[in-house]
Image 1 (cartoon, rainbow, N blue to C red):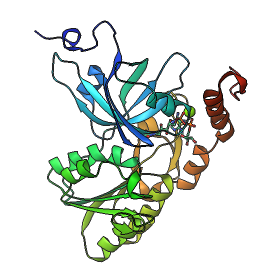
Image 2: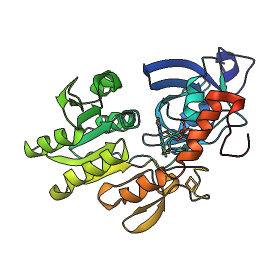
Image 3: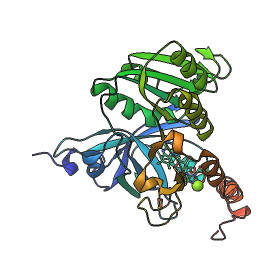
Image 4: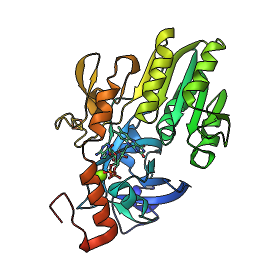
Length: 301
Ligand code: FAD
Ligand code: FES
Ligand code: MG
């Protein structure tokens, strides 16, 4: 019988080894990592929190794909944008390298039902989080209408993958270099005006994008779900870092979410909380890039 060790091409190491790596664009990387316990339980909408090495901070990333067969080395695939220290460090790892800890699956799975026509609106790297949801919605018998957006054509990701799980796919770029010139919200508004009868809309992307989508669907009473991305630390409801206000009540995105009703979400507060540590993030990055000569605001270096 095959087991994880005999099936593992990197025998001799244990843990979460990167078995494939692909650049989706200069700012976005996909990695597939050995993680059978997570792959066995993963569902659309869930995420992991990983720590690259002993000095690493904990960062959440959405499960893009997973593969598990009893007795084989289950894998998970993650897609991430290189933003700061941790994501740049992750992007610098190669096939065969190991990630110290990967905890998950975390968060509640998406509520997958037959809603009829579903709009899946994705911006930038949010497309990676939207893909498994669109795939599950399609498998549940929905008509999936996907709207994919980015600043320009070079930053669009996963077009083929999204096309494969969509009945219709629309593209918009801010500069008009591909698809319709403008924003995903413009495309959604025009589809609603053309009488697309959306039973639900999922919007996943930058917070300002999700906020605008909420305002597009609100007057039409179309139920709209957003996947929120506040700063997370433990991912288990204990630290309070990920608190968001939804319907006037404090929620912890890691255990109550990450998906919430867009019409009830306080996006202004979320945007403020995401920008709480810019000087620490900048100096940590400068420390990583310049090395020993720079000072790090975390005071540990
Ligand atoms: P930093 O320079 O430290 O931070 C850059 C910005 O990222 C910060 O201003 C802040 O807004 C945000 N951020 C920083 N630390 C955290 C943290 N611990 N938790 C959340 N946000 C943080 N990004 C992807 O590219 N792909 C994904 O699939 C993805 N899925 C996510 C799922 C969830 C549930 C959440 C909450 C976030 C997700 N993110 C995803 C965002 C990702 O976690 C951050 O981009 C990453 O933590 C930035 O770390 P950094 O050290 O590289 O950048
Ligand atoms: Fe700590 Fe959610 S990340 S409570
Ligand atoms: Mg960081």
